[in-house]
Length: 230
Length: 104
Image (cartoon, rainbow over all chains, first blue to last red; front, side):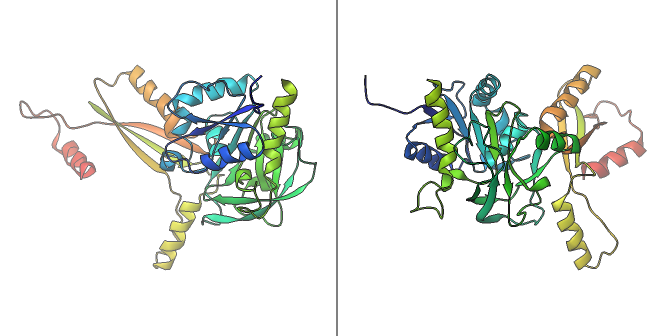
């Protein structure tokens, strides 16, 4: 056997992605094998999980994530997600997942009408997902939040369903920074393999570059899940 | 060739921060009692004859890409374009005037 490599996790780079390198680095720090993926490719290169990173893909033209959602690689991501592959959308990635209808609801401009950039307090509401199993339920964490269109909205029935089925997995605490309904910072699909959140766990993996290392559990969760599966 | 206009608006129950900002700016400029909601207007130049099928296709495009129906509504309407008229003039003058204003 060759050198022991962790599970392969792909990070898609769209034109205008910003945090793809940090996401790749976070995977490496958590001992996974990071695999850069290109938006124009129609293959996922045998990765076992996919991350759609933060940034301003396609310049946020039309609506955030609206153009990227139709990038060639997304057809594969959607197929894989529906087959149960772990998929995480961070910030712009969350917006793309909503535009792709892999997650319900939508993200609109912050109600405060300014870009918000801060260390944001959150509560982990659910650990029953592929991306949050290494947290403890109701754990208080702090992650970087930096977004102009982070207001999560959905119709009442969708909100009720998300709450009833435990699909709200991160909630803003100590103040709602952007007008998100029910203080929602992150949600998952019914199966729990697709997760989207506005804050940036990939910026909080190293004491040198972030105020906390709370983001690590997101990456270790999926890596443990994938290792156990093998 | 035909022009199809697609208007996209945020649903009434969805907060419209852009509209609110514009409303606030208008009030500061002394335009009182005006409340704004901001949407988008798309002008689509459609090649060939605008058949019902073609129009249905445009509606599908609006639903799939131009609008996000989770948060927005859209409206599709056809605008007649002036004929490239050197040979014969069959449009009524009133209609032409209106079209000229729209083009301007």
